[in-house]
Amino acid sequence: MKFNIQDKVKLIVPLSYLKTSDNMPMLRPPDLVAIDEVGEIISIKSPLTVEIKFRRGSFLIDTDKIEKI
Image 1: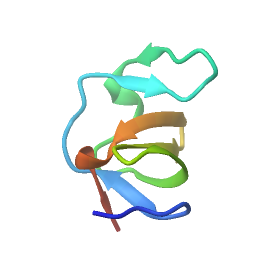
Image 2: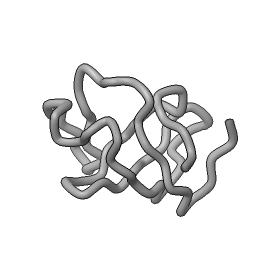
Image 3: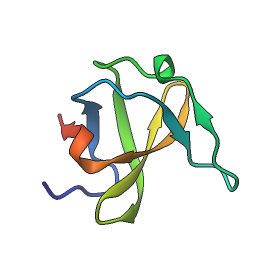
Image 4: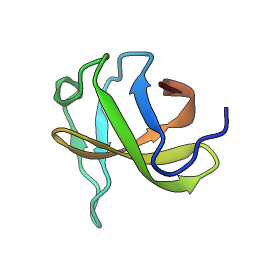
């Protein structure tokens, strides 16, 4: 699926961890983002990874783990 900046997305599978999008990325617990929480794509890092802004922070997530709303 093709994603664009400002697309609204949500997780489709539970994650084992979240990776922050800071200059020095850190691994965070997966319970910071609920499976039904809506986030917004703020940048595309590679064809397989996007940066998504959720209520509790911005995280790098693989595109096969999200879907457009």
